[in-house]
Image 1 (tube, rainbow over the protein chains, first blue to last red):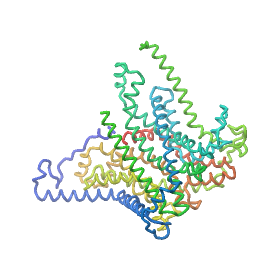
Image 2 (tube, rainbow over the protein chains, first blue to last red; image 1 turned 90 degrees about the horizontal axis):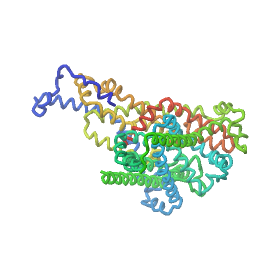
Image 3 (cartoon, chains in turn brown, red; image 1 turned 180 degrees about the horizontal axis):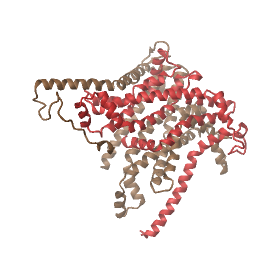
Image 4 (cartoon, each protein chain N blue to C red; image 1 turned 135 degrees about the horizontal axis):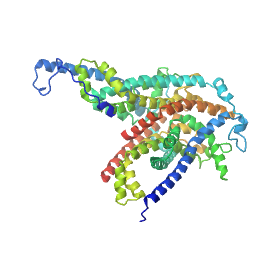
Length: 328
Length: 286
């Protein structure tokens, strides 16, 4: 970005008419002040025109649907006829809906993959940060699943998890392990999806960690070494604190994305898995809204999901602030 | 407290690097194995797919699968629809986003920061919360089973892109813009001649990332697109997966899936330096 600031500022040859010379903006001639106001008004109008599109888009495609969702969650509604107001009935029904509670639990369970993925990603980043031959090639290979279409990836993994002909069990067979039919088994379907999700997201976290580690000044490590710090100390007291903002960013974005997990569930387990044991919240919302036309009820779930995301974000920002105080 | 000699340290270092190299290589194999398996399965015969012991490398590669899928499945229309959606959205959306970023970074506007914060707050609302009212909205105006609901909302700009372009513009001195104003340039001219060339690298990076996201999108397309010929590529392959699995035609499913992720893979391999840099930046700024 230095490229930008390095460019010399063009200096106008003479001050143009209507521009107040610096220093006496409060006491300029009335004509100059009016001209200034006019110029500002023109600028406001152009600026407003430039931001109009995103603001309009926000109002029409975010704020209005949000308001409508809040209202619709209080109604019985099939999306075709007018919604019927029923108060909080949808929400009380949710509390007794064992499928909803199950999808809530499944969705929370998938989050186990987040710490696993972050630890692996950090270890990989530390390894790649050493001058290892083929560093760039490794970075590229680990990143390929990140850019790959999730639908295509889910299709491949669904087949890879096939009990008889899948890649996973064929490889396990080399080691004499007789793998289960991963996606047909209540005990293995969630771990199977977690493994896939970790595999898919690893390269992204690794890349962000690598960038963070490479921005740590070498002198910090050298000074620590002179003071007798060993490898573990340097990791614990330099690397880990320095990559904290990245960890925080990844936890927040992963929790927000994880709470909306849908594509892999819908493709790999089209019926929500054995005994609904892989169905996520969004899977259940889509099913209720677009298969059973229970739009009011589905919207209530969607509002709960929105609230969960909101609260999790708030908690994490608060925790982050407190932690960084205790470190400073 | 053993003090290693420099030579000992170097040897130890080499050993650690070798061990790490092996671990990283094993990891790399795990990372690409499913993708390689997808490609080899596409080239197998149906019999080889279900052969026991497994066939790893097909005896005579069935390149024909990559030919017949274009006629047996709506892959071509899937490509066309995905290109129309991703292309329109990213081209128009990048223009609206960069104009807005310019205004938010460099122009005078009452409540400018409140507007920006409001837009950012919108990012906190997950799409599933909004999708049902949005769906009903679009169905009322007859847009279900068209590409419009996937395109129109995104033409209004991408808040993430606005955020990064605004950030990028903060390193441009205000005096440059002021000087251009004094020279009598209109705001559109300032944008076209000065701002746009300056932020072009940032736009390009965000453009590619956005294109990838939309190309790979799945949830919104499956809600709106029912007719086969109107579906985007991701929906097409997901439906193939259901349809052809019953016929056990896994080579076709794998071939189509491979082709569906190929364009993005190629774009990534060509622009990987820029993509990786801008992604790394995302984390730093987040």
